[in-house]
Image 1 (cartoon, rainbow, N blue to C red):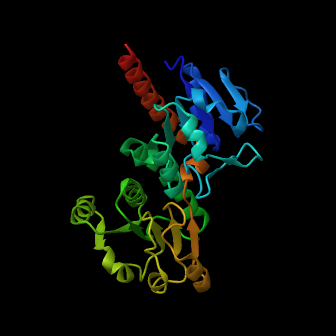
Image 2 (cartoon, rainbow, N blue to C red):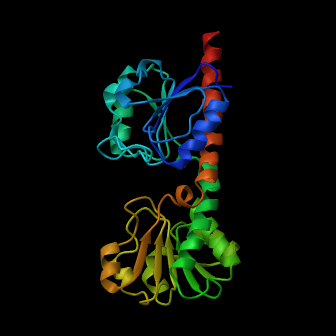
Length: 300
């Protein structure tokens, strides 16, 4: 249980509702910022504006998956208010206060470091990333079906990157009958691709690998699908970029060539927000329980 723990949940989408639901069940006291348009009420949770929050009592701050933008603004789907997380707010929190976010950026890193507050990136955890790959793959399949006029079965597919998402994407599309090639840099990834029964290639050979591709799925958060690569693709190729914004594709050149390129980060929150929220809620609740227990243990 989290009885006696005070947590600020600031902004976010439908995934945050599952987090709020889980934490109220565990008897945490919640301050909800950026939820005034939400009709549902949660016992033990109070809707507040950011300037009404008493940060001096906060044991934890939970941000949406994207965290903040580079100006400190937080996405608030359930509010028209512009909400910012500032260093001065973190300075008011107790020294043990932990900030939880899906991912981070230079701004969030900077203010947490200056305030000397711990920052936990949930999407850096293997368990979260692996669980999230499931709705990500389902959403990718949905996009592939919606934006092509041919079946996945028998299509020629290129997956870039064999991380936790790339591996799930490659395996699933192979099971649907696609002819899958996977590009990677590390020798151990090349070996794993081979072991999975897929066709491996080194990313330095990407231009040669895409000459007959029907669907290209990128998971690498650096511009790897550049103009030179796109120029080698057939005109009917569909590019689905799953990397975090701004993605790894030259979208301007893809449009110039008439190739459909879709940036699709955060698919779990779009296609399966309930499941994606439950994944985050389960991991967060355990982290908060561990942190609470450690602090109580030190106090005795």
